[in-house]
Image 1 (cartoon, rainbow, N blue to C red):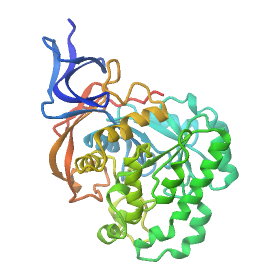
Image 2: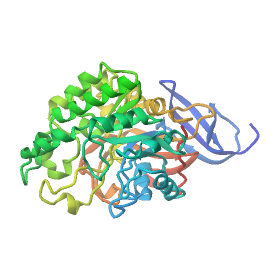
Image 3: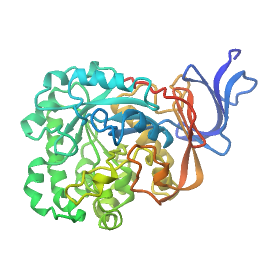
Image 4: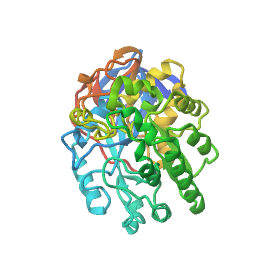
Length: 438
């Protein structure tokens, strides 16, 4: 190889074909050009990854970066900065902004807002409404669109499709996969009597298992009828896992690191409304079932559901408090800690955050360390112990529910499109994120 290589990653333990291989990676023009024991190369930049693990770039399939609308707590720039500092190289960003990303003009605006400002690669969801069926038929032609987002139950923002006939229209008309916030709006309204003022531990009582299960049963039935692909986001209940395990193929589902890491009632005593999210953090029996589903290979993806709010709003009296917590920066350390604690294998982790997102959503050239693939890499130290702190959080909201939480296993380097954006835990390069290709 006579030409000069842009970046050489030397001596790393690289995750290739489900094995750890001690090889070097030569990166040129944002692609992985050569893999092997590479010698006598002319290189512009070199990284010594001795004693470090080199993983395919981690993809977070669910983040809310709040732009346009609530840029006081997050925007595309700050959210993607938090992503790369946490070892995440690509994100799927949600449409419940103000105004919502639910027509072509708003979608194109978001793409132009992201240009040259996002540190990670990105794709955007197109928001479903009861009125935009025509748009949904052509979302497959939109650059950087990962799919359609359907809110079957109300959460942050005003994108809601609650009637069965409208949900059916969205799923049957969409030209791409439909990802669903699955809670039953009618049950949510009926159960408002269970909300206890000033008591956030009543949150999972109000938004109970049946509220989630009823909606999930409904959307799966519709997807099966029309033979359409759906992806159910942040699944939280034992009942849903048992039900969804019977529907592989067109129906896939996601869980979050926080539902695997904290549980009720303890989290509400400790964190108050900082632990409030939709669907809620539930008791241990549900968490145990989520872990069993991870071990058994039933879960398809893990997404952070990064949903920042200001501390000021989070400290109001429940139920005036908004639901959601930041998570894009803590996804990798939390999950590496779980790998170190033998809760899942490294191979399982890589399937959930690299390979499966590419397979389910059809992302091109990502998810693997392979010759000719995009050079998106997450470099981690599996032995590094670190206490997560609020002051490490780059998100504008400035807090994490995991403040004070000790982890073993930490991201050190983040390579996006062939450039080291983060090294040794510090941002060293300007934004060079690109829209994902499908």
